[in-house]
Image (cartoon, rainbow, N blue to C red):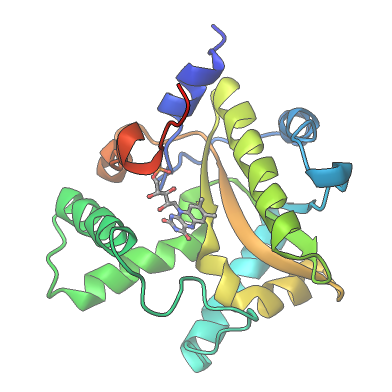
Length: 225
Ligand SMILES: Cc1cc2nc3c(=O)[nH]c(=O)nc-3n(C[C@H](O)[C@H](O)[C@H](O)COP(=O)(O)O)c2cc1C
């Protein structure tokens, strides 16, 4: 049964545990075919996507894990993934998300090893059979980056409609050059972010996480009504 847009918006979550059930190229093509209708300023369509599965997906995982072993802290992106000192209320929202996720999985704050191991699952696409990397020409500015984000969200909703789950993954961003080398992305194109795509493992505890949201009146003001 098809979802309404609002249902898809409310149902989509960041899925962090997947079943091994494969997703076919034709299913992914269908999702991309829907997502390409996303709007962009001037219809510039500033997005490119590299879809990975099988050996290529494994090669990306291997390359990033190798980098993490030898050089874990170099940020290959030209920007920090978050502003250096996040301010309120954003700082607390970010903190709460982490705490809620680890509490759900029974990983205490002091257990840095378990928390790190959990983060490393990002680099296995959380077990998803397919992954994507979103690529943008580095000459694009923040305006077009916003529009790439709109494309990404459209893609997640199109996946949701087809019973597939997603997790957008900026965990790849600090390793973007390493990823680019493996998937054959050359300057001026750069890898922005990854995405895991597949069938959710509904029994996995982590997939019970429901992140909180600010109420409408906390972020919207109405004038002239
Ligand atoms: C661009 C983008 C990048 C993200 N990167 C990651 C990531 O690397 N790892 C992860 O576990 N979640 C990642 N997330 C998921 C966010 O934490 C999540 O969207 C947020 O907590 C809201 O929860 P929800 O997606 O379940 O509604 C990312 C989300 C976005 C939009």
